Each structure stands twice: as structure tokens, then as C-alpha cells.
Length: 107
Image (cartoon, rainbow, N blue to C red):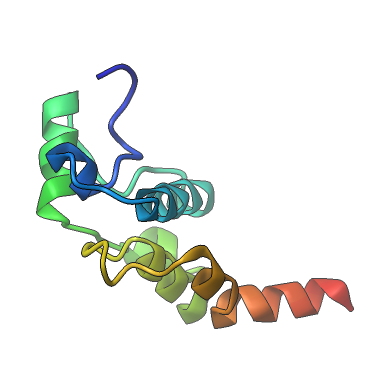
């Protein structure tokens, strides 16, 4: 593997992934953009991989207390652990955080 595993969906490590692994990666990127830190941590690639596989996703009040409930729900939606339950891109675009933000900015 080349690069960092921070953005890799858990199913990619088993080799049984679909395009929904990209939804996961978008969730990681959004988490980092809003919080400034990666959702899964480790001191090396192996520990990061284990953290992702474990699926221990946390939203500490220190960072996430400043964001709406819908923003946190949207990131959790993107980072749905089971790829079969993870949303499609079309479903993501219908999420209330996206539709509310988009309609607010369009006016």
C-alpha cells in the first residue's frame, strides 16, 4: 500500500469493496475539514488500519459541540460501517444537512 490509510473504508482491507468506499472517503474528508483531525487514529499505518476496522468513530464535544446535529448525523451517515447500509451518492444529496445548506446558500 502506498500513502495513508486514513481514508480507506474498512471493506477495502478485505478486498471486498464497491464504489461505496468512495462515500466513506468523503465522510473522512468532511470530518477532517470540520474538525481538523482524522476520525480514526493511530501512530502508524497498522494502528490506523486497526482503528478503521474496529469502527470506533467518536465525536468529541470539544470539536463537534459547535456543529449542528444534522452535520454530525450526515458524517455518521457517510461513515456507515456496513457498506451495504452505507448511502449512495444520490441518497447523500437528499440528506437534510445538504438540502438545508444548499437551499440556504441558494437564496
